Structure formats: structure tokens, C-alpha cells
Image (cartoon, rainbow, N blue to C red; front, top):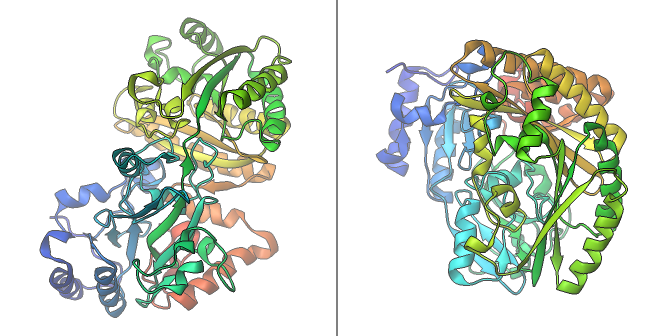
Amino acid sequence: MNRVLPPGVSAATFDRALAQWTSDIGASNVLVSDAALQAYRDPFAPGARSAGSSAASAALLPTSVDEIRAVLRIAREQRIPLWTVSTGRNLAYGGAAPRLAGSVVLDLQRMNRIVEVDETLAFAIVEPGVSYFDLYLHLRKQGYRLWVDPPAAGWGSVIGNTLERGFGYTPYGDHAAHQCGMEVVLADGSVVRTGMGALGTDAASAPSAWALFKGGFGPSFDAMFMQSNYGIVTKMGVWLMPAPPAYLLGEIQFRDERDLEAIVDTLRPLRLDGTIRNQAVIEGGLRRAAGLSTRTQWYAGDGAMPESAIDTMLAALHVGRWNLHYALYGDDDLIDVCEARVRRAFSRVPGAVFSARRYRGDAEGDALPKDGGDRNLAGIPAMTAFRMLDWRGGAGAHVDFSPVCPATGRDAMRQYTMTKARAAEYGFDYYGGFTAGERHLHHIFAAIFDRDDAGQTQRAGDLLRALMRDTQAAGYGQYRTHLAYMDEAAAQYDFNDGSLLRLSETIKDALDPTGILSPGKQGIWPRAWRDRRGTT
């Protein structure tokens, strides 16, 4: 066994800690073998720098808050860093791998209870191991007329995705905005419930308003645990969407890449006035085509795909350069009015091609579209997003670049052309698109590579760093990034000589003085590990 130890911890000390953890949570829940720890490696690690830098020394799988507290006590005593994951399935950003090599992964996947569902008030309270598939199937099995809002890959944790400010595609697509109430274990073992949950001491007696009103009394702390390493979230309230009487799934195709500016400027007022309530997706042509074919069917050469090959492919597959996916929800009269407004607005874009289909609010199975992306707009989790891994062939992998874009056509076109040009320079196609909030866009670009090809793997890593430099120079910032780039992303938020990061560090040192919780997450290093910044 090629043993990895936590930094600064001797083998004897680590063995004592493992023995204590084994006593507290059971031998089967303390993983140390090479085979077991493979699950805690980043399978999509981009670039030589990050490929071997995130090995875990062990993994622990507790099943309760009390077991988490026991784990924390030993970690504090022995100064052993922990890296917390809910299920660790977000592969484009590092998966279950730790930020600091040698950390012990605290894997919460076995804490998988759906604590409560309230159909009248449309909420659920879940633990970290509950996936979108789990919650969706529970709602269907119990006959609740409630929808989840799934992200692109339905196997992910509801809590994990929400804490990373992930997003989906229905009107509840801003997951952080539709979260309400948390239970958190702090580094010292204290258990805190935020907001109205502080009125009760256990799940049975906690007032129902815990998942209804975020504020509670006094300062609000839920947002402090988003994308942070300040505590371990063990329960969370999430708002669910009441099933509508009916819904329409629509697509509008556009033939010219320059149409992006008009698409965004046409979509924005429809989002702001509520005509389109969901997080509509402006999908690039290659991203749409990747679900229907593979790259080698159209181009087998090196470098980015030529424009002529792209034109041939899109025409053959009946796919636009840009493809707007949107949904309308409500009764038939409301959908009629909103659909007419959408068609009238986008008819001003020359060559726009419209298609749409209506469904009952309780439509299931074969009645629904087969495409996973469109099923997401109907609150149904899917895994079809992983078809992208077949695009370039080989052992498919991807790493995502995720800048926030103001919802203006000028900014969207600027980010697109900048990203496309830089990707081509490194030999990658533009595989991406924009998901529309009301006032901003999430611009997601995926560098797809064959992880068995060392050259492609290295170029993917180099490309991400180049894109980060480009967007910073242009005044844009990322909302999320892969483990390997967290320090660089945090450093870009440098107003007043990095005062925001200093504030984050001050809070970190106050709540976690021994620095055991997820060192380096989002570039936030505790005092004990601060000299590691930029080196791992």
C-alpha cells in the first residue's frame, strides 16, 4: 500500500487516530486501502500539477451527528485535516478528492434520510446523502404533487449542490435562493440550527417554520456556510415547486453565432417580467450536437473543429448555432399568453425556428421528452449530461470554467468570443452555453479531453488558467472552480488588497482555530495551513 499521511502527522499518531475512529464509527466505515481510496481521487484531474496532488490518507463514513462529533474530537486532538463531501460526485470540479493532499475525507453519503416533506407548504428537510434522484423518487412514491429542481446530473447531493450554489432549470433553479434552514456541526463539535430552527432542540420538536422563513431572529448565517469551510451541514430545508396544472417545453434555434447578443437582450426582459420563469438555457451548437453524435463523425483532425465541419454537422443534425431551451408553467390560458409573448419577441431575430410541446403537470414516462436536458425543465433528474464524455472519444473527462456574466448581449458575446478563441488556441472546441437568471447568466464552458492522453490533459489545465486570466482582465469572476484553481480564483477577488479573503480567514480562525475543516476550500486557508496557499 502506497501510504499517504496527513501533513505534519506521524504514522504512529495517525494509526492511533484510525484506531479511535474505528472504535467510534465501526471498522467498515474507516477506509484506508488503496482500492477503497480510489473513489476519493479526482478522476478528471486536469494538468500534471493537479493529477496527483489530492490523494486522501483515509475516508470516514459517519451515519449521525454524534459520530461526526466523535470524528471531530479526534481530528482536533491530533491536528488532522478533514475534507467534507456530501457524496463527492461533482466530477468537473474535483469530485470527492481533498484540496490538501493527505487530508481525511469525511464522506456523508450514509447520512441519507429524507427527514420531512410537507406538501401543503412545499418543502423538504434532507440530509447530505440524499441525491436528487432519491428525493424525486420519494416524492413520486408518496404521491406528493411536488417537483424537485435537478441540476444537470441527478446523482448529486441536494445539500452538496446547494452549498456550492449550484443551479437547475425550473423556476426554482437558483438552489441557494430556495434553501431555508440548516443544521451545522462546527469544528468544536457544537451543533447549531439556523433561523427558526433555533427554537427547537430536535427534529421532532423543531417548529415547522424552520424551512419556511430564513431570517429567524437576529443575524442570519445560512449564507455563511455556502462555499465555505466553517462547518459541516447535516440537515437542510429546501423549497419544492408545486406541480403546475400543465407546462410547455420550448426550443428556439438560431443559425448565426452572432445572434447570441439578440438572444440575451430578448430573453432578459422576459425573465424580468416573469413571462419565462425558469432558468432558460442558451445552449451552444456543439453542446447540443454532442448528445446526438460524436466529434469523429464530422472531424478527425487535430485542433479545434473547423467552422465548415461545424456547419455541416449542425445542418445534418438539425441543430442551431444557439438553441434556447425554456419552459412555461401554469394553466392553459396562462401558457397561451406567455407563449404568444415569447414567439412575438423572438420572431424579431431573423431565421429563428420555433418548436414546443405541452404536457400535463402530472405527465410521466413515455409522455415526456427523451432528452435529459428537457426533462430537467420538468423537474425530472437525469444523467444524460454525461454523454459529453463521448464527444472526443477515449477516456472522456472534462473540467468546467464558470464565470458569471451580466445578462446583456454585449457581455455574453464578449465572454463567448473570448472563451472560444482561447479554447481554439489550446486545441479545444467551444462546448458551452449560458443559463439565464433574471439579471445574470451562468456561463459554463467545458474543456473535454481524453484523460489517457497526457497532452490533452495538460492543455486542459493550462487552458483553464489562461481563461481565468482573460476573464479577470476583462472584469469578470468565477462563481465556482475546480480544486486546482481555488487559490487563484480567490485571489482575483482582490478589492482593497484582498479584504474579502482576509475577512473569510478571520472568521475561519475564530470558528476553527485548529484548522481541521477542509483547509484550502475556496482559497480559505486556516492559520495552521496558510503557508500552503498556491503550493498545492
